[in-house]
Image (cartoon, rainbow, N blue to C red; front, side, top):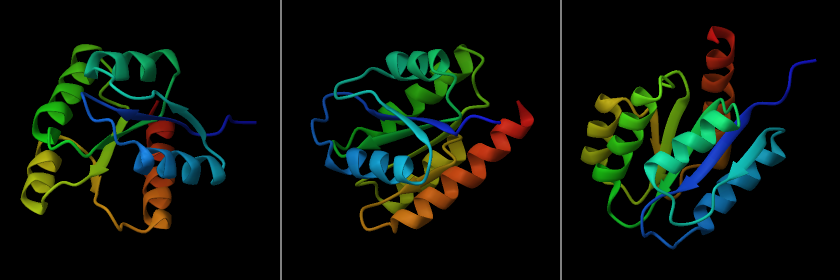
Length: 136
């Protein structure tokens, strides 16, 4: 039997607001996934190392601090540097539409903003992380 999808849910930088990340973590867990929540104040390096060590299928990064245009690209750089670009990388938070579009062009696979229906996030993670597993 195949193990459940394994997702790292992370908070990066000095952002201390984690309610949204915990809501997403619970929704993914309730959908049958294994969730590793990194806790607050993680560096991009720590997030990617956790994903590699945990053999994660995906990383969900939550940012409410406004540092998304710095922290998301740093996670992408770390994924590339560690040869882990196959890990599905998505995120969310208070991110303007134009910034979300720019992040997607850089390689973030999805950006969810406040009010996004939980079922859409869960469906995205199931679909994209299942594809990742088939390619691995």
